[in-house]
Amino acid sequence: DTLRQTLIPTGGYLTPNIFVPLSVWEQENMRMARYQLKINTCNQLLKNLIEIEAEILFNKKPGISMIKNLQKDMVSMRAALALQLAEVSATQEEVLERKSNTLGSFGMSIVKGTAHLRNMALPAKISVGESQTYTTLLVAIFEKAKYLAEMYQKGQEDKSNSDTSEEDPKKEMIPSLLLFLREVVCCFALTDLKKLILQHQEACER
Image: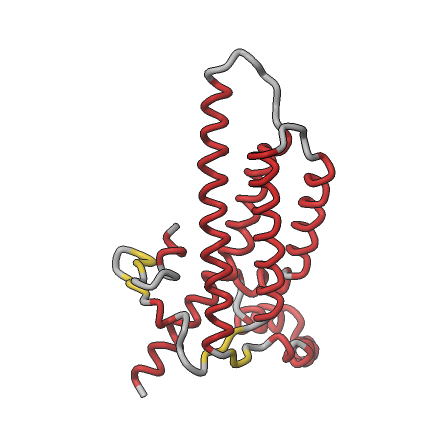
């Protein structure tokens, strides 16, 4: 919810001391890595969220095929974003330094060559319109996820007050999907935001 607040027109606080206006997400000449991959991931995740919501609201039968498809989608999306997620936990400079210390000068040459092959993953300029597409998808995902989380919590409370121990496979999908949201989508979105804050600061200083 904290990240979502930075995506609304009034902006929001990322921390108690850091206020992020929406203009940070929609600045001119902004740069972002793997934009299209993130858009594809967000579109697929939003589709999954909408399908789960519809199943829970309108279909009383367990959607086993939907569960399997969702699990498959999450594995595919996580794999596609593996490099992006790895970069979150270790910067390229840290990786270069760690590997060069281990492998020596010859290893350093290999690592630099590998980094060169990754140039296509370097940040590229995106338009304000493209950024708005990204932020609109993120807001929709966060709002759907919040609704499903509240629905799941209510279901847990109802179950604790009921004599039946029957599990609903559809509702049990929600924790897995919310975990994926935190570990994958929030991870790369927060990383993008941190970089955009720096870009915004540099632009303001010029």
